Amino acid sequence: MIKANFLSCYEQVGQFSVSTAISTRQTKLEERLGKNGGNVVTYFCTPEKEVLLYLVGPVSAQEVRQGAEFSDKLTRGLRGLDKTQRLRKIREAHQETFPTGVQAPFDRWHKDQEDFDQRTVAQKLNAAVRFFDQLQRDRRATSANGPRWVTLSKVQLEQSAQRQRQDAEFDRNEPHVVLAAISPVTVREIQAPVFERLAREKFIERTQRNTDLLATVQANAKAARPTVLVVTDHHRATPSDAKKIPKHRALEERDDFQVVALTKLELVRLMDDANLEPVERIDSFDTRYVVLDVTGQRVSTIGQSSSDGRFRALHKGRKISRTQEGGGNLLLEALEFAKRSE
Image (tube, rainbow, N blue to C red; front, side):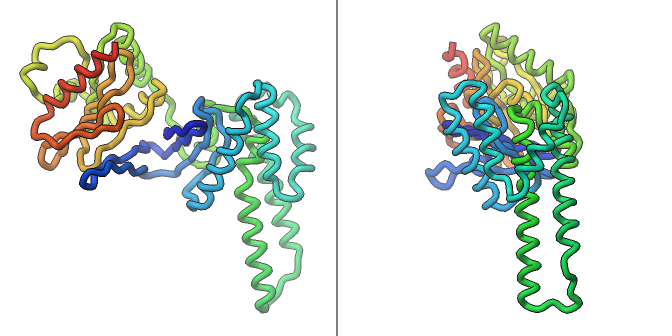
């Protein structure tokens, strides 16, 4: 999740993580957002993960910009409002985007929904999507009853192209209709039904392993003990992975920090569960050692290159180290910084 002052963007991508790649060009630090595989859902939220808008599937840069502008304007309009006022503001903002002819049937449909607010988020979302699907079918049926030409003139071709553009614009309004009906809702509440119902991707629930990892980090923080997360490429983290931390004599007999091995997907979920920002992937340094301080906050990410074994660290405050042959000193430095956070 990428946080601005008032707006957050959260991306859900198949079974893959979304990461920020860190690279350097001479003395300039650069960040690039990267994602892999599967269908994607992009959520625009408040920093508290209350959903303002979602976009399903790969969309154009213009659509992303429009979504960000809508969400940013709405977020600013929510400042200073109480819970009831926020609810009204969010729903009104979505209804203001409705195409011509949607508001009246939406009002009738919503009025006829008995005990709507008592339903689960998935039930409410499914009902809203079915309503919008019916609107689409009615619209296309009306269009299909128009004149059909064997040979289309230039004017008729332009009219047909215009209708297609209008249909596409109508289709893009589905998130506004859904959120006008079901808001307020958080990413955690909506991500499963959106992913399965709209993105047609299997949503994988958090496992006991995810729960145990969070509990471990929280227990270390309670004991004022730093944690070193070793991120492995293995499908399942093994005990030997925990021994992969950079070797250094000063680290051999220390017991004031805990090493935890986990997979890339487990790391993504752990950062989300702990309400921390995603861990960066340092360009060309694929293995990662993530250092959490005595409060459970991330202070350093140390990358190791699989091609030549060199190390590089990205520390708190966005300071990136020089490339080094051994990672022991970088890890020592990060651990000392983590202990000073007491």
